Amino acid sequence: MPPNRVSTVSDMSRPLLDLTADQLKSWHEDGYLIIPNALPPSTVESLLAETRSMLSSFSLNDHPMTKFSTGSASHIGDDYFLTSGDKIRFFFEEDAFSPTTGELLKDKERAINKIGHYLHELSPAFRNATFTSLHRGIGRALGFRDPRVLQSMVICKQPEIGGRVPPHQDSTFLYTDPPSAVGFWIALEDATAENGCLSFAKGSHRRAPVKERFVRKEGGGTTFESVEGERWPKGMDLGGPKVEEEEEHYELGEVKAGTLVVIHGNLLHKSEKNLSGKSRFIYTFHVIEGVNIYDKKNWLQSPEVGFSRLYSD
Image (cartoon, rainbow, N blue to C red):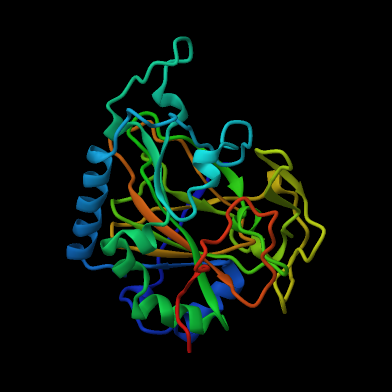
């Protein structure tokens, strides 16, 4: 069944320093929030300018040409990926290369899938856009005691080749025991059905436990393994019938540049391939509960200084 288009709620038309009762109700029922105009146009333009500068200035000479695809562990279990937690690194779209010769088919600026994973500390522009009063207010409203920003990325969704992202849960890739991940997803360009906007299985965070987690393998590489710890966030109020993933109904979330989407770690969401002539640049960072268990199995390990605090009071 094709996805429906998600309409934004009128009382979410401007950013607040906290969440309203209606927004919290939507969060608990739906598993995500769409907040238009969370970033002013000037900030969006500065982040786009920073992104374009990074894309034009990184060198191919010493790059391992690593590709990235959500949901696959077959080609990303290398040191370039696994040691990117405290660096800014560049990961290519799979379709940027010839399937027969392996030759790069696009200019590098139009071939990168994502930039990650330490933009929130190493880039002043992205740091300023991460640690904001709005984001701190959302963290408090959602009940975080010690929220830690552990990764940040620009996802480019390049024209014509931007890869499909299959249905997934963020807590699969950033597992804590119990699960606690929340994604902050910010559109830097308009996200539409044509260029691969997000789609959400509304309410699936109350139906879908975190069954798998993305981990490091002994001896190198990455894999998925069954979750042995908790599969639901602490205090999760479960409701609704149990629905298999393939039966979920997805609703399109078309948004304008500057919109913030907050995503529950158990929520199933996806995006389709970008076959249009327009890119879909977004900035996203993820927060976990610092008092929960984050073990050495996780693919992403903390820098020596630890994961960054969203706030400390």
